[in-house]
Every structure is written in C-alpha cells, then in structure tokens.
Image 1: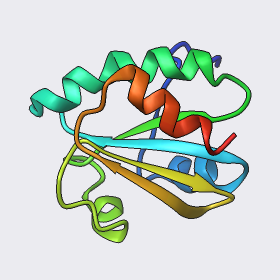
Image 2: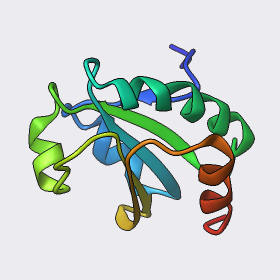
Image 3: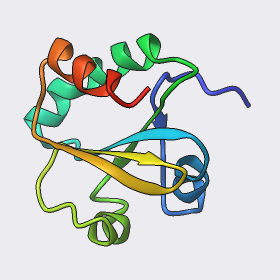
Image 4: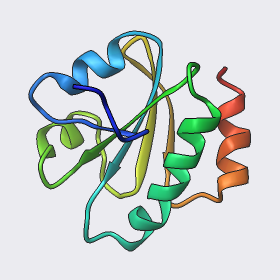
Length: 109
C-alpha cells in the first residue's frame, strides 16, 4: 500500500527502527493534545516536500510509543530527533518557524 502522507506515522511495531536505520531521518515525537505539536505538523509536511529524497520525515505519538520516547529521552514535546543510519545526530526541541527549521536541516544534507 502506498504511503499517502508525506510524514510517515511510526509505531512500536518495528516500523520505527526500520525507518531510522538507513539514511537521514527526522522523527517528530508529538501528542495530539499538544498545541505546539499541532503547529509543527504542517511545517513538517512542508519540509518533507522540500527535502524529499534527502531526508525521510516521520512522526511518533508519544502516548502510543512511550517506550520509544523513554528510550530517546524525550521529556518535552514537540521533540524532533534527526537520525543518520540509526544514530542520533541532532535534537530540536519546541516549535520552530518553517524558515529557521529549514535552515537548520540544510546543514545535514
């Protein structure tokens, strides 16, 4: 089945580990009740288009993936973690403007 969203929804069922394993991947740890997270969602969608083929974009609901949130020491949200071949290379905590976030990500591609 084709992925219709630009930002892939991840879960504990192994999709998370597979997603971050190869290449550069940005995962947004979020919650549906978090207002700054809701603000970041369209920014993540927009940037996923701009960085298509260079950075994979994913999201993980911390209410459903609390063990992964603990594993990566996510204590506040939104918390975007940039991975390269499965290793954490950068964290971005809190809401970001689209332009600022794009500039920060460009340094990694």
